[in-house]
Length: 339
Length: 257
Image (tube, rainbow over all chains, first blue to last red; front, side, top):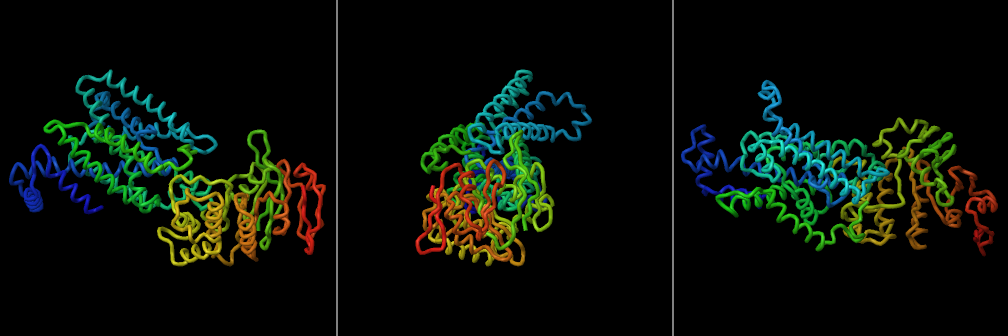
């Protein structure tokens, strides 16, 4: 999988509005490592635009995939993903709030936490909506699929109408940022974003891998996990928070990218099984590869114009998802009624 | 080893378990019997530490159950529940290995692996090792879960342990009902006690050292192995007529309903 990732990575660097050869990449890295200026326009496109974009894409893909794994583990349900349970919509609401009202914040505050405003609000919105969905869909300490999806629909609708209201209030350029954000795009990738997202991903994925065994026990059921000595309340809270942090940070830079958190864990489960100790690492690579391919599609299909990546992942993701459900009878023989 | 003093558990106004006092010693296989809704499962959940008693106290090895860490309890007791719903496809081996989760950090040790494979052989599920759990029949699944639970309390010697089994044989054929209870019985030793909820009184009489009869959240009668069987209590607890017959050529009695 590592090899596949490298191939896809190189391919997505090379192809774009401006083609970049392996030679350019090599030269650029050589110049950069010696602290010299880039030798050609190709080298600076590579260093300043293509490389950060591709890296951001990799990390975001990994984040979304792992977050899907965590969500599904937490809710004990294979068809949960950040988009369905309100996480993404909540993050979108938080972010659009900032787009519209950023000017209200005192300029001093802005100068200090300015770049972090969107992530912070996206995180708060995501956490709040996910928490509400989780609490409301729980009855007798069990989360049933039906109530989960229904509550998810309701909370999503509330968050969406909130975002809609923000769009209505917004002036033109603000409204454009909101709508772009809702569809997801990597076109604004910068090294700063790569650094932040990388750090968050590193911390959060490390925690997730450390808890892989506990998530496995959760597959048996909450009670069974606690019989095995796991503090289930604490685990749930922790997963909810780190997962939301992950999704919020990722989405706060690149917007909402649907279906990644659903598809990648499904495919990886077929490849390596449900053991989280294997599933999480596999999903990191799977997510990176898949999102890189999607981003290439976003850049190349209508080149030189760009399609928002969220449109691509939804268009491809939804049918693949339905196909998966049909083919592998994945939800199992009980016809999908998971309680 | 486990002592309950005046334990009650209530939800709103309703008592599921009411003022139960009993104790459980190592070397005992205790069977809990009673009609549906008598509070058997609730009693087991109180003993396991999953539910906190609304009033009364539970001590395990003379230490209040509230003072135990969940990781500490996981080494002392294992619980077999009535129903399992596995959220994702896992193989039988992966499930059984979960019984050893309290003992290793990321990867199972040689010892964990050998405990698991021995137990799987004992229960006759070695051939199922690579099968997906959700493709198993009810009886096979029950054996797998039992195997996992046994793995959880195997191999911590010199320490009091107990096994709580909530209807362990409900999906098994006669042969495996006997096999499973024989295995449960063989777990009983000077460090280990077993508590099992059963519905078949004759099975209970054959294996139990002590039978607790429950009705409406209370223990109404304790039957010891050597006692003469109290037929009127049995009729009272289950609410049906019963007669006793002598098993030919064996020194035991059979309850007919």
